[in-house]
Length: 331
Image (tube, rainbow, N blue to C red):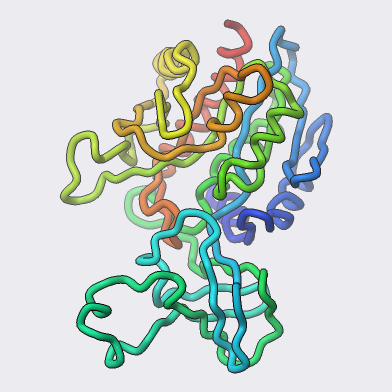
């Protein structure tokens, strides 16, 4: 799992630039039908041992947060903006890979040239630049990505970029390459980070009766945070959501996920704060409506170069996803 996830996460693929991720997934799955829609979603059908009386879809997004170049100076300083929700505090001083052919460092005005007020705050993106060390063939509209190491540490923890949502993608790849009990569709979606756009077209095309979204979700279980503000915790298993900013989840599927987890000895928890959103927001209102459930890997430092998950939680989500296919098919 570690090596496969590392490979997926180290592929660069922000919203609108997912082709490297899509091509890798397509060449590493054994499916019965694979198509790419005009927006770039990879839509996959896998025949199981049985055909359910309803159409079931799993979804995970291929894109990651990143940056787009908005201007290029003659001496190699690049202006840029964010693609997706990135806090400027995790960007200043970081190394970035630009257009997959140059490396740069994010900087801002020298500290001795800043006012007292400026020194006390994180500069916005329009006051930062990427220094690529001279004149490089980079144009406006090029993409940039966090350049960071992927590694294990501590008691079963993994750190890296783009774990959101390559973890979900890898779980779906393993399901496709396995021997599933029931037929299912799998949507590897694009442009989730800029408004769940890919999942909207994917769900319209597949027209599922029920959907299970495999995601990562924010864990705030850090020092000084208590109660519901933790949202979810690493080491406590898969996260099943009842509501976020985009979706009120199907109550029967929400309960079914907990029942399935209990019957199979899978650690499970729920989000303790109504926050965020994912591809469910577009899927559950597609066509005439889709019954939708979200199962997520808890992740610290989401949308940063240092996403952190615990391996045991990943495997809890993987096992629950596999069991939910049969559970949903049989209700």
